[in-house]
Amino acid sequence: MRAIWKGALTFGLVNVPVKVYAATEDHDISLHQVHAADGGRIRYQRVCELDGEVVPYAEIDRAYDDGERTVVLTKEDLAQLPAERSREIEVVEFVPNDQLDPLLFESAYFLEPDSTSPKAYALLRETLERTDRTAIVRFSLRQKTRLAALGVRGDVLTLQTLRWADEIRQAAFPALDEPVKISEKELALSAALVDGFAADFDPDAFSDEYQEELRTLIDAKLSKGDAIDTAETFGEGEAETGGEVIDLMEALRASVERARKGRSGSKGERAAGQ
Image (cartoon, rainbow, N blue to C red; front, side, top):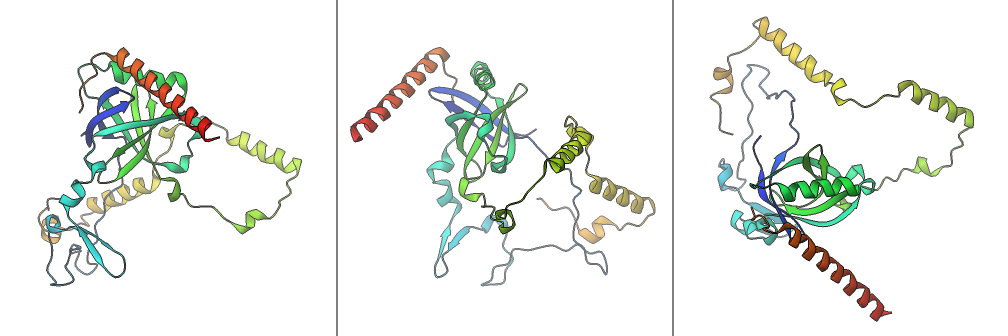
C-alpha cells in the first residue's frame, strides 16, 4: 500500500507519528465510452470558453462565482490556508462508541505507526479498546478540513472521515406522520420471519454478481475474437511527522492536568455568570 498522508496524531501533549493509508479499494471493471459506429475512444477535454483552447490540467485553477463576480483561487492561494498546511490529526474528544450515527461515515483509512517505537500508538489503541470510546479528530486532507472517527480494528488504528452535521438531510415523509396500528400477531409473524433469516454476518459470503457477470461477458467476447485493437482505436496510453515524545508518562500527566484545569476554569466561569 502507498501512504496518502503523513503527519502526527496528537492527544493532549502526546504525539504519535503516523502514516495514513486508504483502507478500501474499488474492484469494479473500468469501462470506456466508444463511438458505436467504429469503436473509437470518446475522450473528454477541458476547453476554455473564452479562447476555445484545450487547457492542460496543470494550468487550471479554482474559482468561486457568486452569480455576479468571479474570484480566482490559485494553487498558491489554497496552499497558504493554515488548515491545509497542518500535518496533525488532532483529537478533540472521546465519545461512547454507540453515539456515532452510521450516516455520518465516509471513507475509511488505516494508520501505521511511523516511528522507531510504537509505544504511544499502542497506548492509544489499548485505551480506546478498554474505555469503549471513539476519538473524534480533526485534520486536513486534499484541501479540505475533515472531521473523523478514530477507532480500532484488530491491532490497527483506523480513521473514518465523517460528514458534517449539516450535510445529513432531514427525512420528512408525510406518510410516516400518520399513526399505524400493528397487532401483536403481525409482530409475532414478523419476528418469526426474522428468525428464519437470522445469521452471523460474514462479508466474505457475498460477492458483486454484476461485476462477475460482466467479467464473464468480456472473457466470452475475447475468446470469440470479438475484440478490437486497443492501440488503433484508443491510441497510446496516457499518463494519467512529528517527533516521538521522549517521556510518555510525563506527557500523559501534563495532558491530564491541563484537561483538569480546563474543566475547573469552565466551571468557575459558569458559576460567576450565575
